Length: 236
Image 1: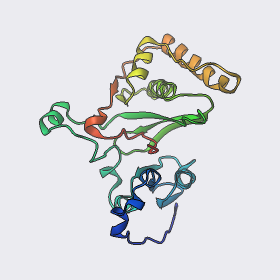
Image 2 (image 1 turned 180 degrees about the vertical axis):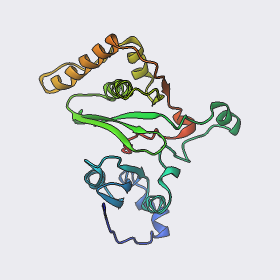
Image 3 (image 1 turned 90 degrees about the vertical axis):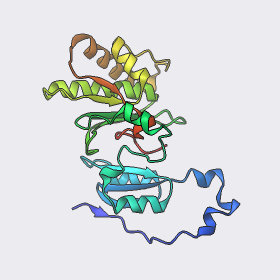
Image 4 (image 1 turned 90 degrees about the horizontal axis):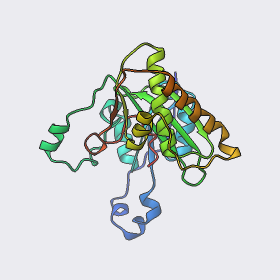
């Protein structure tokens, strides 16, 4: 059984939400991470702790929240009510939401994360319905979000073909979709010794696209209506 991270959960002083000293940019960027399924479960107050709780755990399910109270509330609830959803994201009218409709839950969602300071990039694919991870690659040096999104889509296409299934693939990157359609990653990232491994993967992905056909549809995830894509790394 996975372990649970125990913390001392303290009540949040109402003044903390109102006093200017608690409204700094640093405080606003603080994140809490809920882990429903992992090596350890519970609420973690840093990405590093969350990463250790889910790293290497097949089917890990986790998500970030802007404050501790929301994170604990989510942990005590059903993860399906939170994965891929952000109730504060959508500013669309009810008519607009109805016109967009709901995502196809029997599908795969992919996403990438890239550290803008270090350039280290990773990507993953999950089941849209459950958030269970199907694959995760990286981190790779000298990458970009677009490269990660492109590789994630191709990885998902190859995964579907290998398992002989046709399941829609969702991505929130129009750029990556266009690269896949053109069978070419038109990145502006320069090839350097430190990212040679990544460029080798890009070339393999381009070759796969050129040498294979597929019926699996690649669809745009409607973030404005549905919230963050279920494959989101939760680091925003």
